[in-house]
Amino acid sequence: MDYFQYRNEEAWCEEVPLEKIAAEVGTPTFVYSKSTLIRHLEAMKKAFSHWETLPCFAVKSNSNLEVLRIIFSHGFGADIVSIGELKRSLIAGADPRQIVFSGVGKQDFEIKMALEHDILSFNVESSFELRHIAQAAKKMGKVASVSLRVNPNIDAKTNPKIATGMYSSKFGIVETEVRQLVEEIKKSDSLCLVGVSCHIGSQITDLTPLREAARRMATLAKDLLSEGHELKHVDMGGGLGITYKDEVAPALDAYAQTLIEEIRDTGLRLLIEPGRVVVGNTGILLSRVIGVKQTAEKNFVVVDGAMNDLLRPSMYDSYHEILAVKNQERVMNCDIVGPICETGDYFGKDRNMPAMDEGDLLYIRACGAYGAVMASNYNSRPRAAEVLVEGGRFQIVRSRESYEQMWSAEL
Ligand code: LLP
Image (tube, rainbow, N blue to C red; front, side):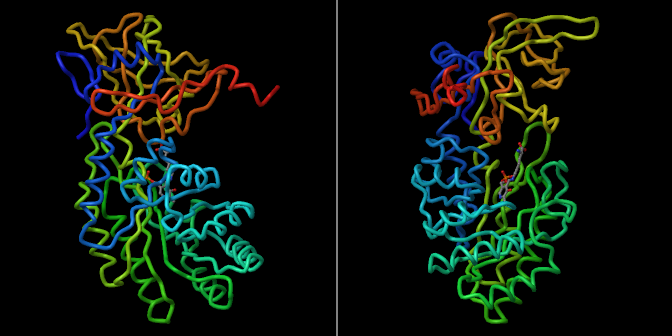
């Protein structure tokens, strides 16, 4: 459920017509609904309320400072993958003791800064990383809290580009290597094993692989506990999918129940790293039609947003619902495309939607996750503005990039 709805055939976000935002801020613009976000945050907390759980928001999915501020003020921690994300999270008020650091290529300067802030845990993905963390911690006279991110070789049944839990992917530590790393941690004065973790992929709509992964993590955690390791948590990563088209996404309660059932025996705190399910449906991309053209085969609606603003359709062939800001009875079949010089620059193909004319507005749904964060300046296009709506008011939470900002670092 979200707060993007029609009133008299016109699209609104909460108490603001989208047309008003386009008139005042221009297009393309990402529009986020604060009430939708808060609703998702509360629903997530409620679903996990019967087990000690820390949701660490996957900052990569939406790193807008104002969005992060709202998320952290609701008690969420952060899952970061770079020092840029650490810095953003701290500016937005994250508690360092609620930050986990994921990623396959943490560099020494990043490890050092994370240690300076005493983050909750490094989710370690290789023996080389463990060595670097140990060296840095030793130099700083600290003990680094580490969790081993295991690759359980489980097929998450999602798009191969965003599946991470199989041996064909670069992520995590293969189960046969876990023992060796545990021994290294045991021997080191600068490392403390605080957890086990895994993340098998994103946009997962079948709970079976998540259950299997949780079962395996629980078994490992129980073995380690019985050997005297004082683990503090099991981190089950992110990955819960949302509905873009006709996927049936599991309910939060079912998701929570699945994970909790499997890890209950460990008695440990549960960590999760949700991104998409928190922010996906909180945002849309608002765009204006530049013109409509026909070829012998198709109608093309050319809009002012493009693959540099929203890369998902081009990159993953992913489906996003596209709707007219003002509905009307005349319909057309069309491809909705951007102005970028690539055939792959499209938002939707063969869509039946209200007929569009020059100057009309449309919007693309479910752009709150992996939308603005994946934007680029391709074709020297400044990055889109971002707007947050709260009730009847809205504020610009990222101003549209200027041309000068775009090339200032090159002068
Ligand atoms: N934790 C780790 C270690 C991750 O790598 C990810 C996402 C998450 C948590 C959050 O996953 P989520 O709950 O959002 O599924 N750009 C792609 C998605 C890439 C996901 C990368 N990792 C897309 O647009 O679909």
